[in-house]
Amino acid sequence: MMPTVERHYVQVPAHRGEEARRALLNAGGLDNSCKIVKTDSALRLPLVRDFDRREIATILGEEGFDMGVGEFVKKPTKPTVQDLLRGVMDDEEIQLLPRAFDSIGDIAVLEIPDALSKYERQIGEAFLTVHSRFSTVLAKASAISGTKRVREYRHVAGVCKTRTVHREYGCRLVVDLAKAYFSPRLLEEHHRVATQVQPGETVLDMFTGVGPFAIHIASRQRAYVIAVDINPDAIDLLRQSMALNRLRGTIEPVVADAHAYCGLMTPHSVDRVIMNHPTGAADFVHDACRVLREGGVMHYYDFAAEPDPEERVLGRLRERVGQCRRRTETLATRRVRNSAPHEYQVAVDIRIL
Image 1: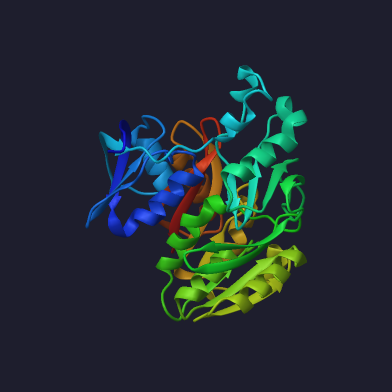
Image 2 (image 1 turned 90 degrees about the vertical axis):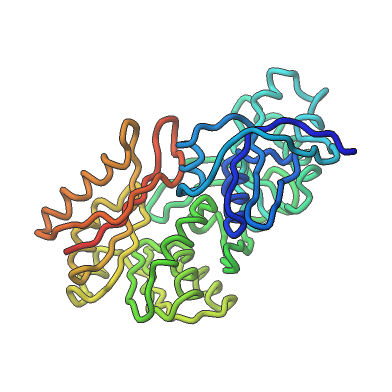
């Protein structure tokens, strides 16, 4: 009989199981040393620690789950990155090893502390030994900066590359981390927004990047998506993704500054605007209000700290929309992810009247 252990868990309906598993894995919350418990109607996912309910709601993006403590079967043991590096690093250094990472296609992106920089090669090689599905390990080497919103990376182990094909909900996205911003942590946002789009809608994606929102929407729905980005490399990558996917809708890729492009558009001509530029979207609210039809929907993203980050973002957004002499109806607010201790990226869906 396989050994069992007691673990805190989150239980979700079976149809949401894979979505929840990925979200927990990306957040570093899933205990991969234990087997997931499956029934006909639900999945019980073991957690690495005792999360509070609000933390899990932030990770999963919504309620509709149960939590508890139960018995789980341990998987056959295999060495961890920490195990492989014992003897190379002392115990204090082992504690500094990154526990979470970004998974982008077959590239893993780690955030390696400066104190461990001399061990980067060993960390990367140990990571590839444990996580054999990856071919490349990169380390973040700078913050996101510039109008193109890119960061620098260091090659740590495996194949030296920054380009890959990333998969989300059956969509294939061509990504080159050296050329255009992309975050796998927005997986559920891409899917959530796409499920709201109705047939025949015109959607403006103001800061499309490599086009994950546009690809998700056009893969699901017969909609017309205008995908705008100032970075020509990002638009080139979007065009490559369009060729890889079977699209039901139409995507118009546009290399342009969103201010300038909106100024050329017919007023009140779109049904939905996506504004995923958390450090700069506020400056484009008047452009979105200009092009949105009455009753159109704005998906707006911003950063805010506790307490009440949702209310902080919503309050600032309402004020800016009011300056455009438009009214709002709040549809939803949610924390997308942690951006810093006690700070979150917040999504707000509002109807513009």
